[in-house]
Amino acid sequence: IQAMDKLKPLRAFREGRIYAADGNLFFARPGPALREGIAILARCAYDDEDVVREALDELSFLPKEGNGWAQVHFPAKEKKLSIPDVEDLVTSDTFFELHQEACEANEDFYADPTSGYNVFTEVAHKKRGKCCGSGCRHCPYNHVNLKDKAMIQQPAFLYEGTDDANGDAFMSSLSSIPPYSHIKVLFFSGGKDSYLTIRKLVQQKLQSNGTYNFHLILLTTYDFETKVIAHQDVNIDTVCRQARHLEIPLLGIPLHRSSGEEYLSRIEKGLDAVRSAIPDMKQLTLVFGDLHLEHIRQWREKELSKYSLEYPLWKVPYTELIDDLESSGVNIVVSASNQDGIGVGTTFSRTLWQDATKMGIDGFGEEGEFHSVAEVWTTSKEQALGLKL
Image 1: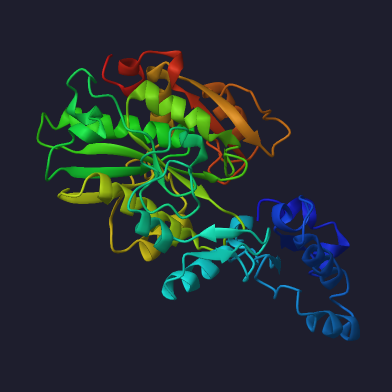
Image 2: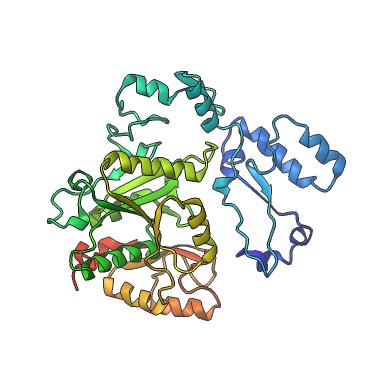
């Protein structure tokens, strides 16, 4: 949607012949999937030639449209549609379904569709009775014995907090959270919006004078192979550094782009890991740093309706957000951008916000114009959180 103005001059745009495909799976790596990639290219190239298109559609190895590739349909001006992320374009013969089928048949392994190697199922791991610490693909124990947490393949805690966090209940480690607590899980990208959400939650807690008690956990999704957070272009190691500095537990959810598993299924597994770590919690609330995009909030309200949802920054004036950023003393750096006037590595400041607004784009990059990372380690934990004025 953001690229419509730049694409409109192209004949491909006018003729409706723009396509999206999972390049990481079909084109970027040598392997059997290159065959499917070539078939997808041919299918897109000859989409307007009926005879060739019909012949290609009969190929057994050509993924159906919507499974790994799709034609992009741009909305009319009066409509607001979302184009699926490439993470949602997955093939139908991927390991998620194969694993499910193997577990239903009580089998100990299945053959990986890409490599052909046998992979242990969750059934086999449960027979063992404990985490072996090897970072197995289907570990049902949240990788509790894995020393190198960068190798997790299932949702697991990358940082569990510090037991001696100065007695601050808000910053409790997992092991010190008392029974029947209210747990808030913040979907955290490492950028300025989710960072400001932490500060807003701290402010709410401080202003309640002890009547608004909860414990915070950060939740971050990232690409399993690259270890990079989608859109932010930030490595998960950076988010781990943020969590350690702020002393807030961090749950990592690695996304396998070629697994075939839906995003919501992955999120649910992550929340199961929270329930496993804190089995006697009283309440679970999901928190988001959305600012004003209605269609994003509507999607969350629909797909996550069984949970209590909070949006602490919803429609908070940008002037107030800029003031809070400046009060924090934390350096905010642009980590990704599709705007010529906003370069990666540029410090996000009041001036940049004003310049972006003059450029005719959202001053906080809420429409995807740019993304950022909060370098919270540039000041003390107390200053970064707003515990110290």
